[in-house]
Length: 429
Ligand code: UDX
Image 1 (cartoon, protein in one colour):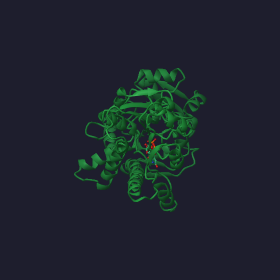
Image 2: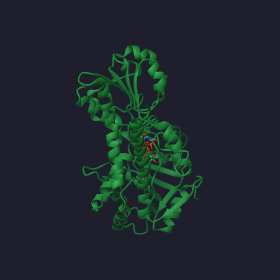
Image 3: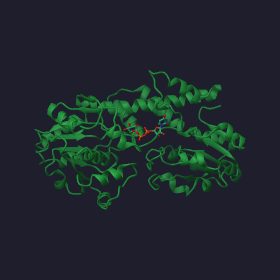
Image 4: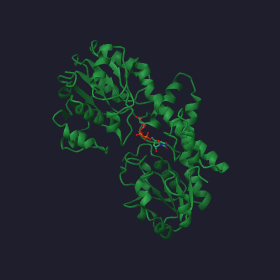
């Protein structure tokens, strides 16, 4: 029965949890294995160790088909397919650190009953070839290797998985490719099959192009500031060209998150490793690094020296709808402000504090109002919808100086100025 496969998933992070829940939802029997006892304990207790809308419900309604374990043998027993969903964080050199991938691949030795090993983690091109060799060495010569990159965005990962734009399957083993494609039966999306290296590159190229569009929008926004044009009008009209489309053209305070910064840097480094300097990709990364620092300069333009100033950062997570602080622009901003001698206060409804070192010197408040009271200036860092509902008239009176840099163009410039704010935003006159 194509809808009742036995699948082992390795890694209970964002990708592994979502993959496990969705494969169970599609009718397969899934055992999710992680080496972190705390994560497995949380899952066994019926909770979810990350914030992701819809995930908890999906896990709960599929509990007949979804198990969690620390035990390798339990995960592999009877498994036809093994999914590698571990993280590939940046190493010191900027290349992806694949040690967790290799540790999972090595742990599969002896599981020659596996028909396919699927890597969903984002990996450099060529990883599949090395994995193939490692599987052969481990005696899994009859097991097919499949690269099946994941394109889900945080905060909407469950619906992205169930309604993808495409399913990319890279393999040189037609039977394994067909088996993995078959696991997705019930999902209405084109399945694109190709060689392993190309599939690995699709993921990196997709993320790099999305990041390119945002850096481009940010550069146009700066040009608009310098010329008096309105970037929101400009990019809105640019996006109406059907050849370009409206998505990922929102100027802001820079892109962050668990994927774009890490994957673009890893792609750049892998190019450098072969002596090739990818100029466009490098510029995309540079523009983003500068974008995150422009907020500090804008505050200095108004306040002068920032030493001793109270600066409120509204939003810490790298985007709304997530608790994820990885590579959040807020962390760069907080550490730059601290270096200028400012006192940083912050608010975020979800962000997991303690993960990023700069917050050690920032004070966190339970509401935007409390962070704003007595502040010399505030920055909208993450476009949480709650920030639209702040009583900004009250805030203007309660701040020491009503200075606001809206890094996400969330608020209405005319209204904010009427309320007495020295209001700055991105690319708007
Ligand atoms: C991204 C990709 O969208 C996803 O396909 C991939 O699998 C993982 O990386 P994610 O990191 O969850 O997903 O966030 P996304 O919603 O894409 O936003 C990335 C960053 O770009 C955020 O910091 C966001 O604020 C910023 N962004 C996005 C902009 O500044 N402007 C835009 O127009 C869009």
